[in-house]
Each structure stands twice: as C-alpha cells, then as structure tokens.
Length: 209
Image (cartoon, rainbow, N blue to C red; front, side, top):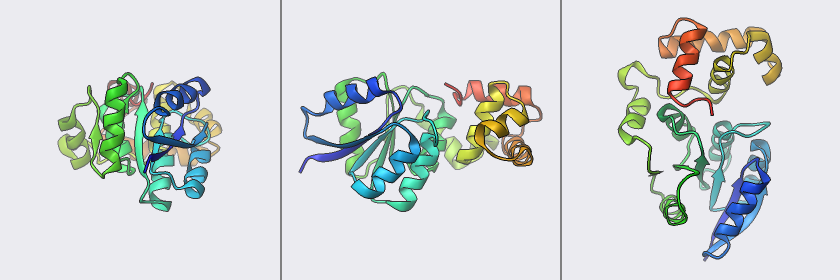
C-alpha cells in the first residue's frame, strides 16, 4: 500500500514542489494545508499515514499543530520539515509528539529515508541536527527544560523579534497579563533574567527563523 501523506506548508510553491517530488514514489498525497489549524482538521478527517509539517505557519504554528494532531489522532506520524535547525526547536517539536525532524535542505533520497523511518515508528533526526544536544534538552540536561510549550515558544520568538508585551498580546490575540505570565515562566525555565538574554538565547538556539 502506498504511504498516504498530508503536506502542511504555508508556501504554495513549496507544497507543489514536495507533491511533485513525492508523486513518482510509492506515495499518495491525500491533501495539502496552508496553515496549522487546517492541517489539524484535515488530519482528523483524512487520517493520513504521515503529515509533513512545516514549523512557521499562520493561525497555528507547527509545534502546536503537531501537539493537537498527536492528541486527536495518535496513530498518525508527523515528520517536521523546516529550515529551523536549533536543537531546542527540535526538542520542542519532539516533546509535542513529532516522530521526526528534517531540514528542507535535505535531498530526495534523504527525504524518502525520513518518510520510511517514521512510517515504521522509528524516530528520525536529519543530517545537521546534534542528537546529543537534542537528548540533553529532552532530558532536562544542563538546566534546560524538557521543552517550552507551544505558546511559550511563540512568545519567546516574538520577544526575540523585539516586540513589547502589548504587541505580543495583539499578535497572539491574548491578554497582556497572559503574556507577562508566559514571559515569567520562560525566564524561570531557562534561568534568564531579561528580554536581552531571552533574545540572545532564542537566536542561539534557532527559535527564530
């Protein structure tokens, strides 16, 4: 039986390119989603074998979309396919339930190997990802948390982009008080003390694209 794949990617050209690349293989493209919320809804209806999931998407980012997919349809495999290669970002995705993580610069053969790996239940980490560092993040090594929640990751990335609490609240459609609470929890988890340290941390760990 061909592997049934849903492509979740906000850039139409990339979606079309992936579909064209995969169709000659033993693959059935069951759907395409341009944002995370649509990806979750389509996965619930279509029940693909694998979701190829980008991280930076509108409405709902790839980490939170992955978390919801694995909660609602745990049998569906999620393979993250992104440009973001920071090890904490990888750990964040894996903690949300992702079955694999690969960078968009990988070649055709590597992509097929990643798909084959997650299809049979094996975790896949692509070339260029430091598995030991990812494991340390997942294990809470060196004082680093297991992973930030999806919302905390969003807030941290916006802080790193220089947004103030009110701007973050408006961007995420949440209360300023909620942003302040997330900021406090993030600093506690990462043992950081101000916005400058948060921004530096986010950049070094690849939390912003």
